[in-house]
Length: 441
Image (cartoon, rainbow, N blue to C red):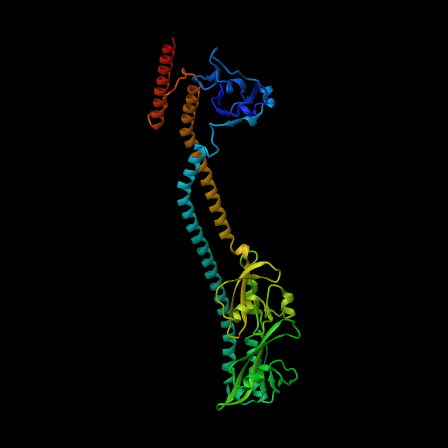
């Protein structure tokens, strides 16, 4: 049996078998209106539904009792009814919002994704290009400094006084060279047995036979070198050595021990942001120059450091790695002509700060767009849904017999046509009821 709420028009299917007494008091789930239903009205054949759909007594034409009693709501037994009028699907408002979001956001998401990807690649490319450029410039500066000193020694080794391997002739020239190039704190010559022949500091002659650079020159190298820590300065020093030849035959070795102040200055002067810095290691991976002086003094071995290994493997693009403090970093590295490694590194977060800012801005714009679309979609859907709800309410009231409901035509579109159709239906029902009444008389 169908029972209709007199207040809001929601329809319920009532199962008489589940009503324990003679009556059941049911709470409308739409408006909390309390409906009292007579069980006999639902089962006795002397009862029937009137035009409103309520259970009525055909003899007395009395509908089942309905009253508004919120206090009695807890007495209701919802198990005896099934709501018929309202579905469980999404409402029209939600559907319109979803539709507008799909229509407007899908192109936006595609554009955002493409732009976001292109921005990421552009910033990474710019970072990579800038890092490689800096590394190349620094490598060229170090190579130029080494070349300048090597050319001085080459020119000096070709002088007749040097070819003579005479101590008196050589010492005069060596002292002049040391004055002209003050970073060369010692210039000296060595015979093929490794014994010191002449030197610029008037100190006692020494045996250099065990030095690697002496052996390298004797083995035919045009330029040999060795990195060491100065005994007096406790700072990194570089020894460059070139052959001394007479009539094309090797007769000795010309060497110069020099400070690396010029190289250290390059490292000290370069900074990138708050965390970017340079360090230099020798051919064995030992630190020559670093912002941490302790690493320099102890010649810290960084041969297994990611940037040093990358330079050894000739990897030219930027590298992402964990630094000595386990921070996420990026860096670039190159080898010099002396097989030194010049490395540039910076914290990843700082290096890609511009990328992070671009990402944040993009997400904020996307979120703002999403909020605006939802607001616009909500009000647009309300403009469509509210007239439909009013017409639905009017139709429900007409269905329970309230034929005097006034139906306003709010627009000239399809909703207006629906309002006209319901008005015509209302008039038709009214005329039908009047005809039935006339027949009963």
